[in-house]
Length: 132
Image (cartoon, rainbow, N blue to C red; front, side, top):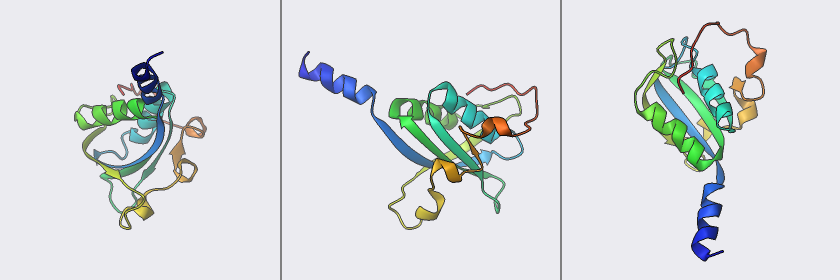
């Protein structure tokens, strides 16, 4: 196996934890469930929390394969509806836990309101199609 093949293989399986702040039509439109279901479809772990003081914001933590995380972020950046309830992101910002102003917004998946571990525990509205 060549060095290039080894590097490509390692790159494909790199995992990380990334934090984001999503802005747009993201509350009361099944956004959190849609994000979590999209993450699960890609074998990622994820968490999503509504920002109480601003109904246009949701905090996200995505963990797993970097390419799969980027796939979700790219879809959100497209501005397309992510579900049939018309949830969509107008802007997404990557947060960095080492920046003091971002630190309170970056927290472990288990601290989020909705996660890949608890998404099925909620009584979600039915009939929503997920496009993510």
